[in-house]
Length: 133
Image (tube, rainbow, N blue to C red; front, side, top):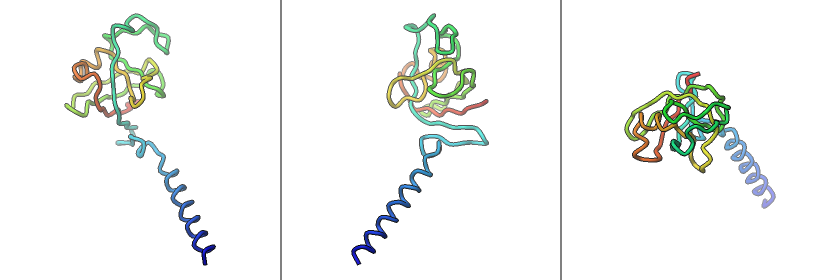
C-alpha cells in the first residue's frame, strides 16, 4: 500500500512539473500578446548624459535626445511602444542598444523617451512594452 501511495505521489509531482514547464510562455513571465503583438511588463529606467556620444551595442552613437532604448533580446531596429503604467503616457522607441544590466528591469529608455512618459521624475517605473514590428 505504501508503494502505491508513493507511485501516485510521484506521478502527481511529475504532472505538476510538466504543467509548470508548459506554462513558461511569455504570458506567465510578465508578457503576452495583444492582437498578435508581443507584450511585456516590467520595470523601466533611463540613461542619458553619462552615455551621450558613446557607441551603442548596435554601433551607432547614443544620442540622449533620440527616442531610443536598450533591451536585452529584441533585435536592433525593433519599434516598441512603452507605456508608463502609473500615468498611462506612452512613447514609441527604436531598440539600438543592449541592456538594462540591473536585475528586474526590462528596458532602458533614452532621456528623451523617459521624459515623454514622465519617467525622469520617477527614475524607475512599471511599464508595458508592445512590440510594433
